[in-house]
Length: 131
Image (cartoon, rainbow, N blue to C red; front, side, top):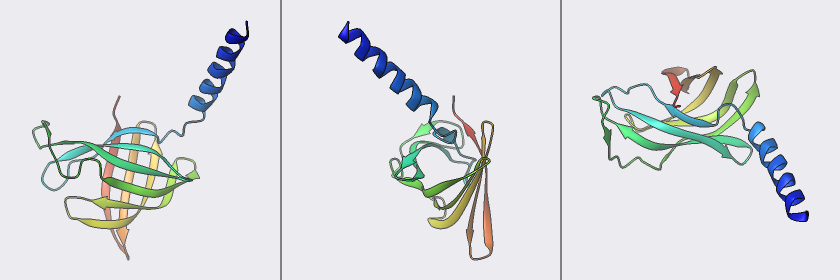
């Protein structure tokens, strides 16, 4: 009976943790870069913010390819501001090897990404959730 009670408590706690997951968490497909390459970014909590790591890379034909950037952090220090807005973070664009101040706007299964240096901004397009 104690075993059953312990299992029930564990199940309830696990369900609560799953429900508490932020909507931005998950796997996202980027827009193609200047060369037509795109990637899959895994977004997860990192401390009090959110970070994203490149987990797969694809060439312009959609074929998965090896990349020296696999496992590298693409997004970091992104903080939830409410209403689907994430701000205060940074994003690294591997195709240009540049780092930008960034913000993201989540709408359904789309994540609009933008990065800026001074007053010059680069639209990262809308990333799509990978299901």
